[in-house]
Image (cartoon, rainbow, N blue to C red):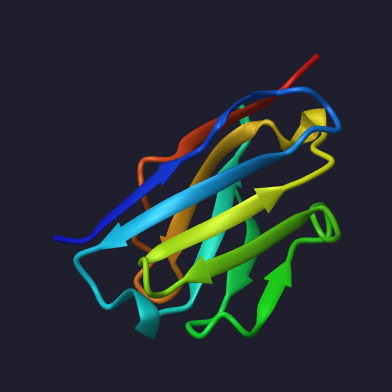
Length: 114
């Protein structure tokens, strides 16, 4: 059974940092490109960042480029999203997703507020 379990969300002040993790199981994690997406309150799903299977190539949405960093540890079957200089508009539920199969986890809530 494929499982993607996000963690690390919470309440953070504007300008602060947060690190999200996504533990993968039930498939060969190192063979797949992975994605972070997010859903802000009352909005649709937005793409945040991609990383290729080996971790050497990354892509970012313009709204997070320079502030967020996607990375992965294939030995630990874990995907990460380092969020720095967060803004109120980063408030959302964050999901990790298999870029090929589009399977995703249950999400982790990130709330940016003073």
